[in-house]
Image 1 (cartoon, helix red, strand yellow):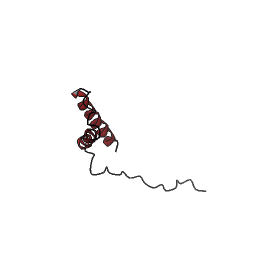
Image 2: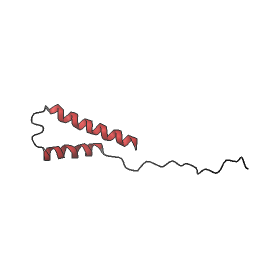
Image 3: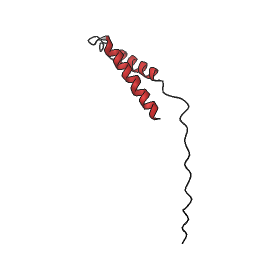
Image 4: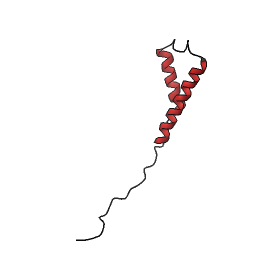
Amino acid sequence: MTTAAPNKPSLRLVPKPPGSIDADLVAFRVMEHIDAQHPTFWETLPKTARVGLRNAIVRAVMAEDAKR
């Protein structure tokens, strides 16, 4: 019986993907989709609601990108 530890495969770091998610583009596309599919959606809401939603989308995309 041997007390030597069996050879374990060495771990290597995997580099991040070369590209990153363009949060502005994602937010733009989502807002464009809302405008096209629900044209009256923004009529009853204040202008700041649109800005707030866009900023929330950008923050969410950036947070997900940081996890990658």
